[in-house]
Amino acid sequence: FKKVEKLPDAIKNYAKTNHPDFTLNSGEKIKSHKSGKYVYRIRLKKGASKLVLYLNESGEEVSKDNIDQEILDTESEAM
Image (cartoon, rainbow, N blue to C red; front, side, top):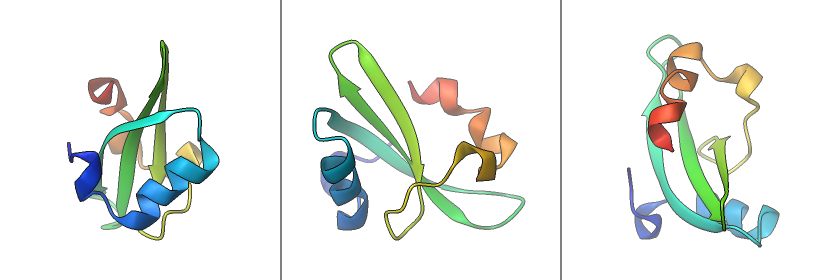
């Protein structure tokens, strides 16, 4: 997991703009073995509430429907 400071600005800006009440805790860049594409999985927290979101390298949210199952299977490890 990357510290927040090491995440690209596009990723940090998305979290700040779209989820201002949440704190960005960490994130990681993940490469899909099937597609070869990269996504960022970020973790946000507000009190007891937690969010795990997926963003492309431009900082745009990617629907979980478009994320390879191999990546989603590791989501519980991310919490």
